[in-house]
Each structure stands twice: as C-alpha cells, then as structure tokens.
Length: 291
Length: 280
Picture 1: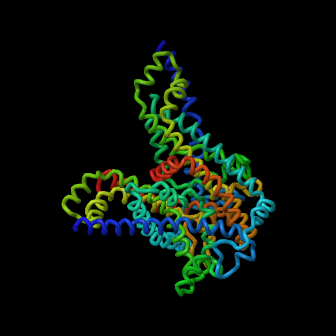
Picture 2: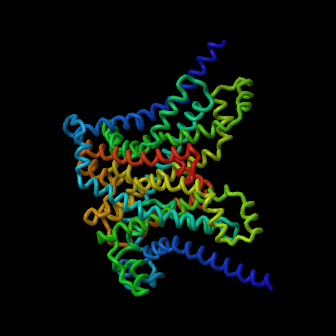
Picture 3: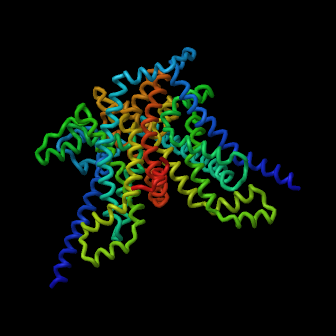
C-alpha cells in the first residue's frame, strides 16, 4: 500500500516537474553552458568549431570598440540613473497622499511604462527631429536654437538618456510608492506635534526610512540599464560615429551582423561579470540588513 | 489670525503641489498627444514650422495607407498570438513546477531549485546566442515556434508560482488527500483557485514582456509576415523612416491594444511591473 503511494507520487512528480525542467535545461541551462564554450572558440556559424583558448578574451581587453561600448554604457547610466531616481521619487512623493484624481495621475505617469520601447523610441525620434520636432520648437520659443540631438555625436546620448528617464519614471515611482507605504504614519504625526515643517519631515523621516527601497531601486535600475538596447537600436543604431554604441548593441552587431559568435559570446560574459558584481553587492548588503 | 495664515499657507502649498503634479502629468502625456496629432496630418503638414498642435485639416489617410501598404493587422495578430500562447504556456509550466517544488517531497528538490535560481543572475544576452543556434538546429528560424516555445520557460515565473504555492496552508490539501483526491485534483481544485491573483499578475507581466519584446523576434524572424508589432514598427521605420505621419499612425495602432488591456487591468499591470523589479 505504501509502495503504491510512493509510485503514484513519483508518477505525479514527473508530470508536474518534468515539462518545466526539460524546458529549463534545453532553453536556459544548456545555452548558458554552450555560451561559455562558444566564447572559447572562433565559431562563425559556417566553419567547424575551433577552440582558440582565451583569445577572444584577450582580444576583448585590447579592443577599443569594446571599451568604447563599455564607456558609452556607463555614460548612459551616469545620466539616466540620477534622473530616473529623482523623477521617480518626486512622482511617488506627490502621489503618496490621498487626493482627487490620484488614480488618474498614477495611470498617466505609468503610461510610458506599458508602451513598448520601439513605439516610445519612434515617438521620441520624431520629438527630437531638429527641424520639425516639438522639442526644438519649444526651445525656440524661449530663444534657444536646439541642437541636432540624435544626429550629433555630442548630444545623441543625452537624447537617449532623456527618453529613457521619461519612460522609466513611472516604473521607479511605483517601486517608491510601495516603499512609502511601509512608513508608519505615526512618525509624521509625532513630527507634526513637535512642529516639524514638511521639508524637515521629508529630510528627517521619509528619506532615511526609504533608504532600503532606494537601495533596491538603484540596483534594479542599474542592472536594467546595463542591458540597454531597444531604444539605442531604434533611435540611433549606435551612431552617429559610434557615440551611442552600448554593450548589448555591440554584442548584437558581432553576433547577428558579423556572425562572430565566439567573440560575441565572450562579450556577453563580460557583460555578465559587470552585472554580477552589482548583484553581488546587492545581496551582500541585503544579507547584512545594512542600509 | 494664526489659523488664517495657516489656511493661506495651506492653500499655496496644495496649489504648488497640484501645479507640480499637473506639469509632471503634462510631460508624460504630451509625447502621446503629439504622436496622435502627427498621425492625423498629411505629409505636407508634418513638415511645417512652427508645428500645428491641432491639425488644421485632420485626415485619416495615414491610417488607411499604413494598413493598406503594411500588414499592420497581421503584426497585431502575430503579437497577440505569440503573447497569448507564451503567457498560457508559462503559467501552466510554472504553476505545475511551482506545485512540485512547494508541495511535493523528493530527493534533490532544493538543489534543483537552487540551480534554477542561480541562472536568474545570467542576463538574456548571454543565452541568446546559443538559443539562436538551437533554433537554427531545430529548423525553427523564421517560425512562430521560435518566438513562442522558448519563452514558455522562465525561472522567474517558476519562482513566483513556488512562492505562491508555499503560502497555501497544509490543512487544506491534507483534507483533500484524505478524501482520496490525487495530486492533480489538489493542484487544480485546491491550489490554483487560491493563487488566482498571483496567476493574474504573472500573466499580465508575461504578456507585456512578450508583447513588447523586440530583440528576440529581431533575431529569429526574418520574414515580414511573421513580424510582431515592435519588429513591424522597426520595419516600418526602415521603409518610411521620414514620413512621420505614417510612422506615428503605425505607432498609434501598436499602442491601442495594450492600452485597452491596461485600462481594464491597471492593478495587475502595476503589480506585474513591480515584480519585474524583484526579478533582478
């Protein structure tokens, strides 16, 4: 009787687990291993696989194109991250208290988040149009001759950063709203009784108590921004003159335009290492309960 | 007197507050309005300086042209098909494995689950090259399967479903087992109904991810008839990159369906997106 139940359990286990496990091994597990192996070859999809040791990684370290993509990615992050955090936090603070039309405002701020990157990129490309775009028109109203935006190597990255911050503000806002809800109202009541101003309350209560959320949001946004691709691909394709070529754009170019699979795989592992470092920092801090 | 001052202060503060709020909302919404306005202009009217916010001669000819010359409805259908099937697949496979990980005892369970979790740190860019080669070996390049089948398996979905299943009290399933119910019955009739909100959230999240996915279809699909909306829009850009009225009408068509879903299921959208944050 007991043996019977065990057999039955095993049968159900296979039914429940195996489909997912097989899919996982085929589409996620094996590709990770394969990618590592490919990164040590010079495979071009056509000729037979040839192992080249760590040649790809040596090439990577010496490749100015790789370092340019690396630098561009960090440039993007340095511009994007502070903007999206500040706007996201500001929006969350504005929308945190009960008010008329709160649902409407929240939905509005969230609208860009649900729109696909391709759609957003096309709209912004049109907004940035140097001659007929809305942005340069608005600038002309206050007497500024707008730049060439995406056509100019010195402003193209700024264009991508602003559009990205616009799209993701609602996302960061939602995460901060979640964090704000964990702060007990009793702190504010006590502070009001003591006569603390709103600004004082913001600086002494909200910001410190929000620190764990802030940390969490920073890490997520950071990891996401290392993988920036769609908006770059649509708005500039990495141009002009490589000024917006980011790491994933570079991986895409080498893998699916030049078919240098080995080298592209090595680059993807370099990306992994960078992301891993930040994930590691996150886990370390979370375990300690610090911040 | 003091009260009056306070009242005035309060008025200005809440006034400033609403101004900020409205300015913010304005910045968020103006690009969308500009998109709609442009889509209703003929190609002459888009190239005007200063631009018109409300088209003096609104026309729907862009919509007619873009749907006539470009299979927009086909893109829409492809997006829908791919998103619906990969969402359904992911929910079924994730919920089933989630049940096994949370409610069944077996050797190596925690080790296997740890292996799952470990892969979560690896970005998709690492796996996409071998996945592409796999699709090539399967003969799936330029097919629907390539866009649907691999996306049915996700560690994050499995993780989420396991967590949801863990939250169900043991007594409920014990009672069902006492009555002679099989694991399948318990899964379907006890567990699934209890985690419905989580399923809805995962569903919306997966649907949106698939609906907006650009990179993967770009890699595995080459024929226009299989393009999803994001890929279709990029093709549209390649063809009519400077006809902004036409392009914007294409963008509007691509946004309307997801917007409609959003308006009906806002709560789940926001939850789903918050979870995508947890993913990393």
